[in-house]
Structure formats: C-alpha cells, structure tokens
Length: 300
Image 1 (cartoon, rainbow, N blue to C red):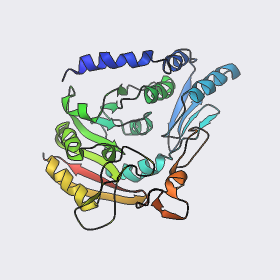
Image 2: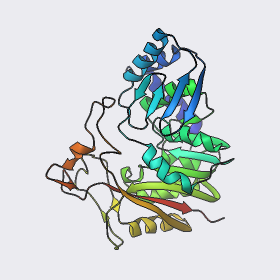
Image 3: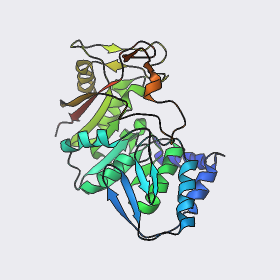
C-alpha cells in the first residue's frame, strides 16, 4: 500500500469548505507562553494572555464542535466534552508502561489520550484517525502543548502497512464499528513488534457462550455497530488473529457520568440512546452499553 500517495490525497480534505475556516483559525492563534498540566483535564495554563487572545482561542474552539473526548482547559476556557475520558484512561493506566516505546493510538479522535500518554515519555507517539475535524481539534490543543505527536489521517486498516512496527497499540472504541472484526485484529497484530501489546476496549454482552449480538439496524441509535461479543467470543477473535495471550482488565457499564450531553456537542448523547422506561436496555431493546477492556500480547 502506498501510504505516501494516500497521505497526499487526504491533504485535500483540508480544502473542504467546513475545514478551511478551522485551519485558518488555528493558523491565527496567538503564540503565548504556557505550561501544560497532564491530569484528568488536559490543561494549558497561560503565563499571561491578553483578553483578545483568550477570546480568539474561545471562538476557535467553539467553531470545532462537537468535542467528544476530553476534557480540556485552555486558559479560562473549559471544554466540557461529551466523554469524561479520564475515567477510561485512569482505569487503563496501571496496565501499561510506555516509557521509551513506540506507541500508536488507533481512532485517536482529538488526541486526548495521547496528550495524557506524554507523561510516560514514550519514544514515539502516533495517532491514527481519518477525520479532518478531529485533526483540527488536535492542532488547536497541540499549538500550545507543542508536542512531537504525529497525527495520521489514516485508519486501522493502514496500521499493518505503516513504516514501522509498534511496541504498544491502543484501540479504544473502534472494533464494533468494523464489519470484519477479526480482519481488523489481524491488522493490529501485524502492526506490532514481537512481544508487543494491544490495549483494546469494545462493547460486550454478558454470557459464557462464545457468541455475539448482531444488531438488526442500529445499536444505541448508532448505525455502524456490527458485532457485540461476549468476553469469550472476543478472546477467540484475538486468538484467531494471532495473539498469544488475552488478559481481561475490566468490565464496566457506560453511565451518565462518563458520557453525557454538554454544550460542546449540540447533539444527543447516552441518555437519548437508552430506553426511557428501562435504562438497562437501549432504545432498540438491546442490552445497554457495557464495555470490556483487554490487553492482548503478541508472542516475543
């Protein structure tokens, strides 16, 4: 696969009429001294900033809605994202060590998790997400963070063809969007160095059987949800993809504290996706969203 040609082709996305104003706004952002706080809220604290400069940052951020992952704070501006992403990150952090490793985040969105990962001092940090909007959100934050994170407008299907292999790959909330989950897991497997680790989460259903739910049309109002496995079925998928070990790190229901409607999305959220008379079910009558978090290892 010619990734160079693909990258060049996708640069045309920045000429889309909805993206051009965002890119120009990022280019106009003030260059002000700041220090970065990489905690639950990724915070850019400015040493000094003029009111008109803060207003420019505020306007640029609001142009980029919806903001899904976060939260972020830029000076006095708090971006209260749909997802309280620190809940997932803090759950997973005890299970990985990124120091001096080559790390990839597949479906990285605006880079929230990657900014948090900087604290562990990875050797190289690369995000994959074919979204010009999320890239611009990342560009806004990184304008002030000034990290050397590489953001690729590529998808999971390109990982195995990338210029190098990874020591750790994160793939959070992507698998259920793929119509061929085992093929996707094989691509991730091929993208890892020997002994490499995959940190993955996906929707799951309860049960000991090696089966999965296949929604008829939508799941939680989401059209591109294809397969929701039991934990044992997910393990089988990983083994079929080539992984040697699969460790279940946690199982958690998604609740209204982790995912909720805010002024930064202007669209529906979890409360709208559940049966109003029975929150244990989706609006379609399926089991309400529940996630399993795993670590899968490639043989050394």
